[in-house]
Length: 107
Image (cartoon, rainbow, N blue to C red; front, side, top):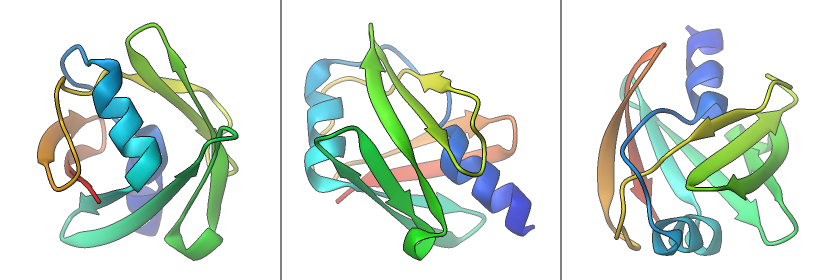
């Protein structure tokens, strides 16, 4: 189960096209990734880095076209995902991933 949770935390998902505003909010505020009832705090920094699970997961992020791309120490393969447009701090949205459904809440 831990591998499933880590995979979901670093895969960061599939969704609909997104506006830059959503990604700005994600990077500025961070997110809580909710997987199988477990809340995972993810913190992004402006220099293209992120941490999750109390530092157990570290990685990099970038915006490529309309997708949010990540790679991490858990999964070095870059994964790119489109988030829904016009989301802001406090908003949540659900995504379906290969590991199952997840919810993202922008802090």
